[in-house]
Length: 329
Image (cartoon, rainbow, N blue to C red; front, top):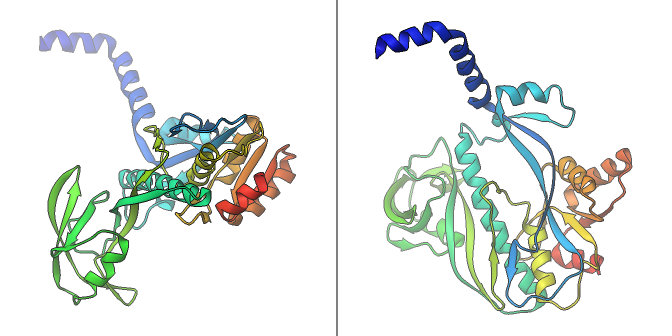
């Protein structure tokens, strides 16, 4: 058997070496991502609202096309004008690996989506309730002394229950630097006992982590999201809020238009800035959008790009959900 393999390899070694080289070139990832203009994702079938009102046009998320930094993709980025190369180091907090970055962005996706539900129902004066809040670890600092992991849901600290973000600091403030606290978390739906040593961070007692709140919301009518595996980040929040609002109120904000946009949102309807405006705006224009909605902090960049490239699209500045709705009306 071994002799047969050796003879086969000697006869076809050039082919095998070529295949191995191609495998390396196309599969090994370098510490880079390649970004380019994306397109539109219509929210009609992505935010599902029971008994929703009909709309003539559509609300659409805009996105940035992201590719892993394989050797081939990195080389192509020097040739293709719309492909921009970015180091993973520019996205890291300290020595974070790419998997934790992706996981954190998945958390932000859920956080902004359920904030969008609350913001839309508040604006429409319709009932909702926050049944519970998951306080989720999004980053663990290098200087921390803990075995907590990204995506852990904190349930208690030294037997003090954690029901929302505001519970954390009063608990931590009871201890001094060097004290160790026991932390119960949900990890992959299983309860796990963890620990953390108290450290001083920005003149406050801390355990060296960052957190997000994912709110579990009940509404009438009911709202459900359809998430795709490749989606992440917080920039869908504003457009989800607009789409939900349009489905739970009688007036059709779209007026038959293809409305695109980007921006994070909190439960009070405040719109946060985002990255990748040039990719999202170009993708919106290429895919025939009539309107592009952009956060206040990104508005001037979008207007500049529109003028430089002579884009035929209306750009609306977004500071909060209420004002965007009034502009669309």
